[in-house]
Image (cartoon, rainbow, N blue to C red; front, side):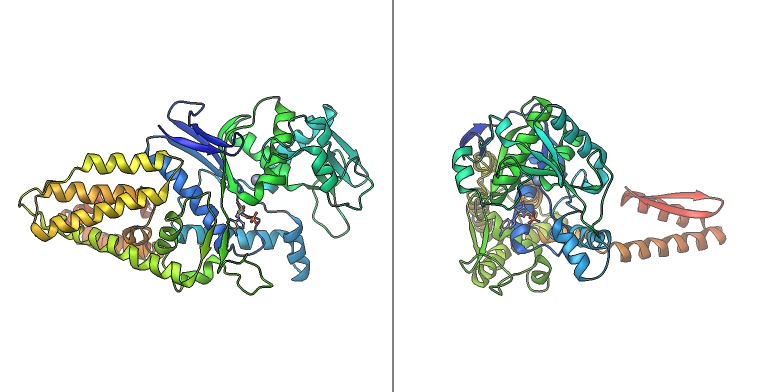
Length: 468
Ligand code: AMP
Ligand code: ZN
């Protein structure tokens, strides 16, 4: 039974999805104004572990990660570089997708963009205005926090303390300092979209409410993000969505601990700011993922040169065994079957992960398994094929499937350009064979490619291929 620590309830709860064996999950994605940093990477990879483990447990997961592609930071960069906000957002959206692919993060079901959802955003703001929860001013539309009795339920903050502590913002247009913007009227030179309250752009919080509602429904299962988002971002998402729909918004809220560097907050001014891209030339994606998996997702993680290096060394043991098992598998060894209870390891792995995704404990199970199999291989150099298959399968499913830390996957995702060129070459050879009336070889090429999931389609204009 899977249990999740729900920030909203401040306790671990049994996970019961709305629909049996299906999970709807939303994670706040990046604001695309720069390359993302290694701290962001931790949040994206933690979300990936959660999603992959749910899939391992037999759930079908609809996983949505938004891209905030219009925002003050994007506009600032665009102005500084004398180009449009759109070109900044397009460049860094592309870089984001490349970098998470490199990090072996599984593709989301969808990456919705704020600028493609203006209709839904405006509709939700209109609902809030009609219900008297939001109000228009000369500079935009604001959410009246006083009107939502549940405000503060996620972060555990109460509105009176918040009012007192609120930074005194110089904005006399707001009824209360806690009220937050749903729509911001455009200042000269800023990008804008038309709305009933004038040309402008949405606030950040409403984007996530509108996009999650559109793609996952008014109530959905899991919402995640870094712990910095609990307040105000997620608190505001709840206020907006629940006031607009009258229904509970999210059933399980999960928040990831922060990543610090050498015990310090990462920041440009401290000079310890590392983009994920910076790391790629020195460390493998698998080592980075392994380092993150060794720490529980709620705990802070201190990133040091030493910690990533020892992760790389530790991981090597697992990868060495996996490679050895792969070799034994193709050698089709046929010796004795060492005694080892696969069932116990499978259960221990699931028990650990079912306990609020306790990945450090699950890693412990995996490494106990590695030690035991290594010992078995000392005694039985060529064990039975059945044993090799099981041991190989267990590591592939857990280390590979759930944590994405087997090198083989980096190879599998490969070099698509080279792949396409090689397939093109095969097609040319096949055409040559057909011209020489060697249909047997031409068919052999077609059939062998099909076995690799590459389907050829002949037409009068030539042959094209599709990867399945
Ligand atoms: P942003 O682009 O700043 O909105 O951040 C994207 C995601 O990364 C959010 O889920 C943040 O909570 C998360 N995040 C930002 N900084 C860190 C950090 N130092 N450690 C872990 N997660 C972070
Ligand atoms: Zn969000």
